[in-house]
Length: 69
Length: 69
DNA sequence: ACTGAATATTAATTCAAG
DNA sequence: CTTGAATTAATATTCAGT
Image (cartoon, rainbow over all chains, first blue to last red; front, side, top):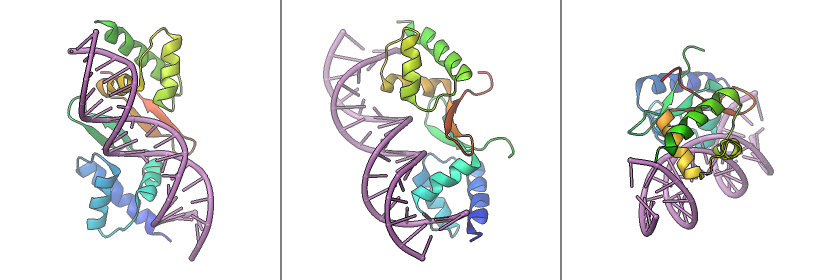
């Protein structure tokens, strides 16, 4: 199944364009894009993409993409 | 209490020098350096320092310092 | 190999207190 | 303003199934 590849691309895009604070939130965006997965899968995707969750210092926590990969 | 400042410095150093995979692990190193805090405090420290936990792609998860701050 | 459901683990926040 | 204990929330992993 090559769905994972297209999904990973989408996840990447979403993280770059939105301020996402949790995997559940990301899950919501993904669904709007037509992907139906669970949190477990998303966790694995984020691992593959090496995205990190970092505080912005005051407000909350945000997912970040590594610079090119 | 200015202990937080010295502790933050130490946390920074530890994260730069070791491969730390959890706050509990970091807690251990901190104790060896003479700081006795709880996970709650550490979580706050990491927030202040904007450190992030990121997968290295295969093995596990590692804490990372933002490039200069 | 990829995934979901359930679970275990880890991390953030609340709430009270110094 | 900083912290710890307890709690809640978030995330990683296990285990089974395809």
